[in-house]
Image (cartoon, rainbow, N blue to C red; front, side, top):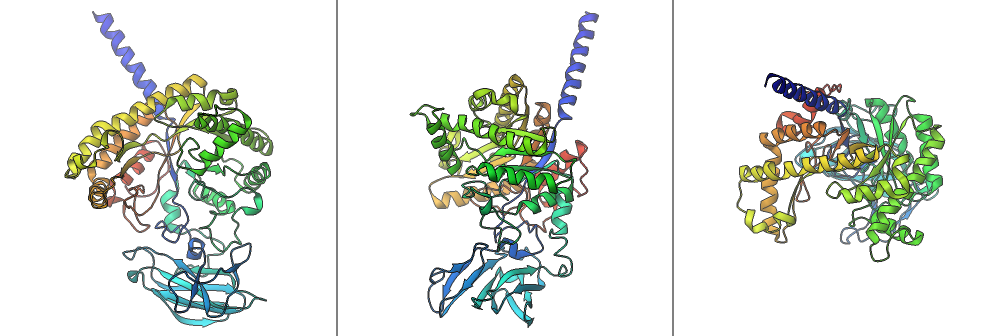
Amino acid sequence: MKSIVSLSLLLVALLADNALGQSQTASLGINLSGPADWNTELPFVDVFRMSRPWISQREGAPWGKGPPLEIDELGWVTSLADGCFAESMLCTIGDGHYPGGIYHVFYEGDGELAFGGSAKIVAQQPGRIQIEVNPDRGGFSLQIRRTNPKDHVRNIHVIMPGFEDTWQNDPFHPTFVDRWRGMACVRFMDWMHTNDSEVATWTERPTLEHATFSRHGVAVEWMVDLCDHIDAAPWFCMPHRADDDYIRRFATLVFERMDPDRKVYIEYSNEVWNGQFEQHRYAAEQGAQLGIGPADRPWEAAWHYTAVRSLQIFAIWEDVFGGHDRLVRVLPSQAANPHVSEQVLSFRDAYKSADALAIAPYMAFTVGRGRLSDADDIADWDVDQLLDVFEQQSLPEAVERMKASKKVADKYGVELIAYEAGQHMVSMARDQTLTEKLTATMQEANRHPRMGQIYDQYFAAWGESGGGILAHFSSISKWSRYGSWGLMQFYDDSAENYPKFAAAIRWARKLGQDIELDE
């Protein structure tokens, strides 16, 4: 009996050691919120980088009903029709959650600027204007009222208070930098406007000279600089239409600009398996043309094309980098369906030229689908009832998906990582009133201390399952009926008000990541 007990204790110890070893491979990364005038993360001290593309306005006409604007290849307005002006929205953030005070506006060219909303001019001279902004009154707009076609207004910069002397050398807001310093990786899916991307050639890429990043995404130069600034690995999502020249030039820029000791994650687009995105339809069409999927099952053609195009992209990056030692070559798949992972990994032995299988092991709680298809059944739940089901069903389901995906990854000898992760509470009820009611309860749940405790269990399960890097979705974003994705909602929020943010920081520190923020 004593020997059996000793053997049992040894087995328990071995299992514990194995679990500890597996958990040490885990690390926390982050998906950043995309560039838009409503972005509440405020990563840049120049808020015009997030400005809305120009809106054509006509005096006395309804909003946005001006004639088509003459715009150059960088997005600057080159001329205006009589009685018309161009307008761009900035900081359309409610509840005063962006800095107030004196903003410095710099520009080049011959023209006249005006401002609407919460901004008013307090001083001006050619090429430089000071505006006073009151965020309690909402966002503001910048208007081009006159521009000389021979010397059109361009290179506009709208600088937050206190950064008028430093913005050119340090474009990132210090709160943003401090918050994410110590992340294992930064996934730039939304910064690159990956979903439904229109970018195909290198000339179509966003640059530092473009009027705004809200059209095609952030310039790669600043993605590289941010990662060097916060000591994190970049995770790039190559646009689904990007040609080989784009891939090579992108890789070359990264190779030449980035710290040579830094790893780089490379992924083909985002969720190519997901039928709601244009990249899925494109991959299915390309796969059909190549004859690598049944005509009556286009989704299989998309899976196989994901493998084929990924291998082509990996090869280009390897050529630029002189091998794959610095690369993490990512093959993406669907957490809920290990069969997709099998198809992507095995097609033409793609796994042999890859390093990781990436999934999104969300804690699913989508009202209007699956077991929660009848929204009326949960309409009157309070937050504790909702969290009971979330913890008892959504969490274990996510853990089982982690384990199932790890088995597939192990089978093919690749690491399991998470391209997105976290809670997935969304109401898709058809009744608008019901959706608003459910959304309010979901947002209360996301603020609740129990959500932090559930996140603790979730992160621990990821480590125990043998998962590697986990890139939470997402960083800072305003919650809405479309989801409560952000770990916090505003750049000036405190972690103490968001238990799930505190849980994420707590887990990262436990893993040894150098996070300076308070929980």
